[in-house]
Length: 105
Image (tube, rainbow, N blue to C red; front, side, top):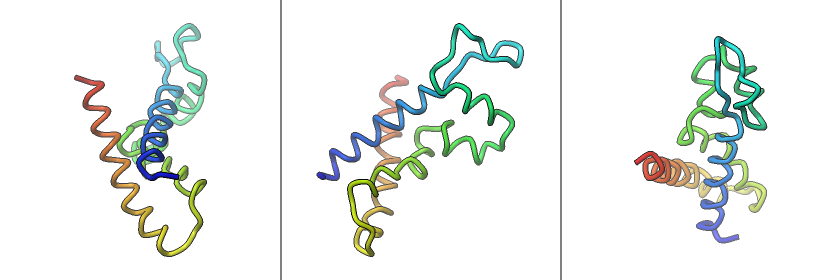
């Protein structure tokens, strides 16, 4: 698969996953009228350290480190692809940062 298309797909997946874990917190409880499909994941880990929350669902730029597993679905595991994967993580993080900045503006 073309790596540019894979980056775009992975970026969209990360933004979708990030959105799917959001909920509105009202007095320490999840508002049943304002929560997404995977809200329980963020709610269950709300007291976990930020270093754990950010790459799982809290920060779209940080999420590139864990959610880049999509790369391995389309590529064989070998030394060449491992080297490309390291660069892929940085490229995905940069793309997520770029998209996030444009959406926030």
